[in-house]
Length: 119
Length: 107
Image (tube, rainbow over all chains, first blue to last red; front, side, top):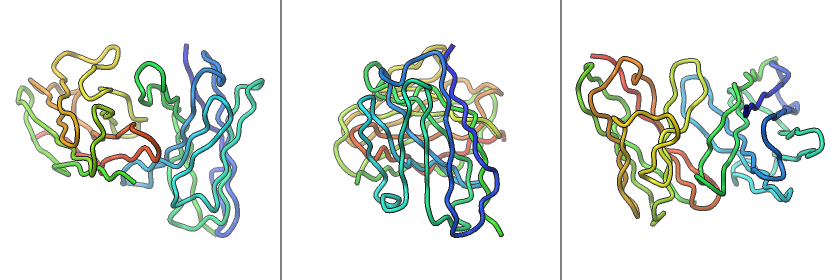
């Protein structure tokens, strides 16, 4: 079955960088796009960016200068890297399958990984 | 960027009632609108895509409507498992903006 699972550091110090890996199963990264979405505690959902099947990316302009998304199709892994973290980057980070062909929407979500930015 | 304005921010209703949540896009997004449900402590789940098509396994008491800039999600005969938060999101080009969410609580 389709699964996405994020793994991250949990705690990041202010001004440091964040790296999260999303490992997928049940589908190929050459067939589906992957978006990253975050949710600060008690707040709504915020789209960060997408990596397309062909490897191209698009980012939320608010994060463009410090966000990078990449992937390794052979390992079924997608990577998020965000630099210069501040306390307001504390959030749950989700990787999400983006079904651009059938639904055009985000049909499978990972469980999310909680990231706290604190010294 | 396309902005999504969702209302109400919160809603209190009883089991068996019918509720409607609305979402307005800042420009024409045709029918490229999805709705998600999120229960406390869980990941969001896709409910509706292309404004009115129910995702697999979604009960028929949910319905989506609208096109262009005005959309709504209607839930008939609320069930206990329907309480949680709901988000709209456009999928008409990046950035894929979400609405601010509606928290549906039990009265």
